[in-house]
Image (cartoon, rainbow, N blue to C red; front, side, top):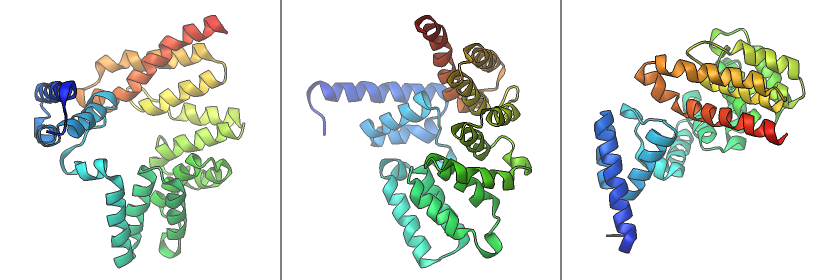
Length: 252
């Protein structure tokens, strides 16, 4: 055993807790073997993915190696691109850079790929917007957003969220709010609505923010299990933010 003393028992308790939790939720096919083979690391990954963040590994998307060693996946994709320089391989690597918060590399590769027949590729442009936003290159987000604006898939996408938040960062507050409002919807788009509430809080409109957060939480009981699970993170954040509003008002 790699653990000694009380640490060993803590690991065992954590492993048992995770095993029981996944059995009760019916996800043992995805998780049980990971928890057994990697008692500490597997259990920590399970807690983060299924309990804290609610980002589940599903079916073929389970990639324990990339979670434990994300650099390994990127290195493999870099080698694949070096061997076969195709647009598809470029996108796979750029997306991996973006997911790993290597925003400079992601932006560079997306940009380099926007040539020829792929000069207006929607995926590359949308992902480039997100990379630019994370790099605080807000001025460069806006023109790309205008290119994609009329596409149906842009309406409530993460790229649209980056567009709205870039407008806010450039002090174009009214335009930013119009974009946040366009991303609202009942029983859906909880990340966008949560970010709209934060926008309102940043602009000293706590009561408007509280209305949006309350609406989100009121809708939660009426969702199916899949929707609840995939949006648990946003409900948890909404609850915490809603609790903080009266506290903030008292200390203001």
